[in-house]
Image 1 (cartoon, one colour):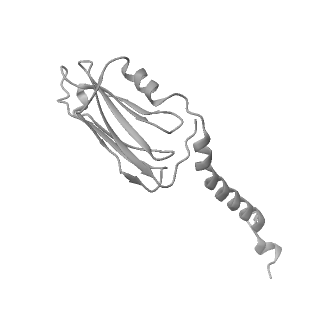
Image 2: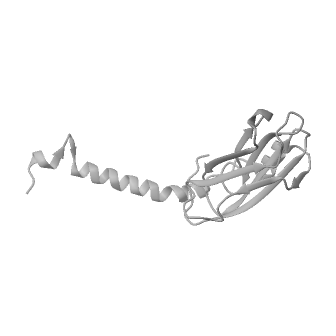
Image 3: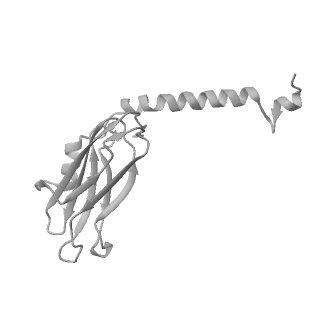
Length: 161
């Protein structure tokens, strides 16, 4: 039998702990479903056109490393590298990463300078669902190069719009 002293630990009783735990579990369980219903801010194509303008985007020179099967969309490793000598005359200015189904199609834009030494970046992203990811590099000569990869997400992440 518990006494009032053992039922209360530092001002928190068992009912409050159980209610808080249940609320947290419920919120975590419902967040992926809520993410799928968030409206997209713009299309992937319009986000890419905002990045590259009317310039042609050619496949090649860009390498996109993304796991093809993602168990949890909350933290997906992503690495992008671009073939470039990174000299003042020939370097990568920007790398943009875009997705098809998250509420915001532009995942990240990284600005580089010749002093970076190598044109490569790595991070973790959130994916709301199974989708195609595209990386586009803007070169110092004004050309754009790209690579794409598909990721199958078994547990969707929640993204806030």
